[in-house]
Every structure is written in C-alpha cells, then in structure tokens.
Image (cartoon, rainbow, N blue to C red):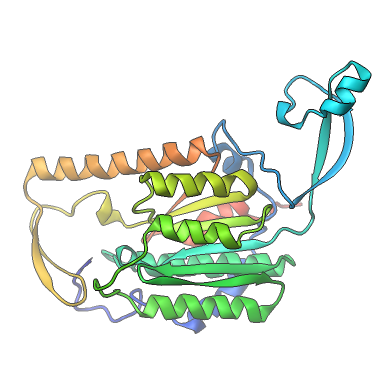
Amino acid sequence: MALVDQTQGTEGVFVTLADLITLRFAAKKLHLTNRSRALNSLAGPNKSNFRGRGIDFEEVRRYEPGDDIRTIDWRVTARSGNPYTKLFREERERPVLIFVDQCSGMYFGSSTRFKSVLAAKIAATLAWAALDQGERVGGFVFNQKGHKDIRPRRSKRSVLMLLSEIVRYNNALPVSTEDLKWSLGDALLNLRRIARPGTSIFLISDFLGSSSDYSKENLFKLSQHNEVTAILCTDPLEHVLPIAGRYAVTDGSSSSDLETGNEVVRLAYEKSATDRIEKLDKTMSKLGIPLLKATTNKSELKLLQSFYGKQKK
C-alpha cells in the first residue's frame, strides 16, 4: 500500500529490464569478495565459520588458543599426544545466489519508489558485480504464489535470465490474494535445496514472517554451510507516520483514509516498527548473518559501496 501522489507516473513503482541492465556500470564500483570490517562486525560475535564443499582441506598444525575446537584433528592428536587442528582454504570460486522478495508486502512506498523496486535494483547491482569478478551467478525470485530459480553460471546470459525474472515478478505486483501458498519460510526452504555448501547468498527482502520458527530454522540451516548476507528493504513510512492529517492510501485496487493525528497511535506505531527491527537484528546476529539496511529514499549503491567498495591502492 502506498501514499497516493497524482503528480507521479509509474517510475519507482515498477522496473524495466533496461533499468536493471544499466546498473552494470555502477556495479563496477563494488568488489563482493572484499568483505569490509564494518560488514564483519554486523555479523556479531557468533559469525558462522561454515564448512562445506566450498572449503578445501589444506594442512594440519599445532592447536593454538582461539582455534575453533570443531576443527581439531583427533587422529593426529591421539597419535602425537598433542592437540592438532585442521586448516582449511576457501575455494577461490564461490557461487553467488541472490534471493529476491517480490511479495505483496514489498509493493509499498511513500515517496521515491517501492520496496520491490529497491530490492530489484540491489539484486541487479550485486549480480553484475559478481559476474564482473568472474563468479558464477544465479538467483531465486519469489512471491506468495511460487518462485523461479536460476542456477549459478558464469555468463551474461544467466544474469539476464535472472533480471528478466525479477522484472516479470515485479511487474506482476500486487499479487492477487486468492490461492496464496508461499511464505518467507517456504522460500528459504526451497533456497536451501538449490544452494550448494560454500555458496555466497544475498537475501533481499523486508523479512516479513522472519520471526516464525519455520523461517528461523531455515535461516539457521542456510547459515551453517554458506556465507549469508541479509539486506533489509524498508520505507520511511514504515518507521514513522507522516505529520498529523488525513491521507489517502491505496493498494492498487482499493483506497482508504489514514488518520495520523492521534499521538498514542503514532508512538505505538513507532515502537512496533522499532521492536520488529531489533528482533530481526538479534536473529541475524545470533546466526552470524550481517544485516544491511536499505531504504527507498536513499541510494542503494552508496549503501553497498560502504561495505563492498573497492579499496584505494
């Protein structure tokens, strides 16, 4: 649902393939394999040391204080009488999967653009950046009725297939409320089925439904064997109601009035929004997943550059 502004056209409501293709030039400013200290700090103290086929065994050495006890080589330890640990080397090539939420909850915006458009542009920028760095790129686009997955490949064609699906799902919004089958938890479960261990996964969503045990379980299992980064898409109106007055709101098919003059209602609204973000922060930090926060009225490229910007030589 969005505030009505009759002076605006459809720009910011839907994306086109041309919009997403032009982001290839902006993406050259990013380097996804260089995770900044700021990004690592967002993962919290429980940062996941995932192990999977994306990790190769390298050597065994003496155990040192601070080493992960899960990597102790018990056979060598028993044979030598001293603790030894295994060292692993990350595969140079890591598939990238971009998870893009285009559910009806994303069809929302109060001024500049909708969350669904923001998510689409973030996804396209990440896809182009990954391809530019020689990674295999794939994706998973979904709404409440189903999904489309694109398996990771190192080709421009694969990225264009992903962008085309994003545009198709984006332009289908708002999704009819009839026969809705999917939740965020369902989407995460199906993402797990196609993500091989060691994959770099970007989750782009407003994360409505992430507080359910079903969603948390699938997030936990994804984070065990993959490098997961979450990008929260929000709109300013979701945090603070506009100044006191009566506003027309619409979901694209019907409209109603929104009264924002009651101070008790305003405070309760703000508290509810703050509590939701804090719970999401806590969940992601517990799983070792960094949470980036994007908003519809600010540049997504500046946000990504602050964490993935190429370092100056």
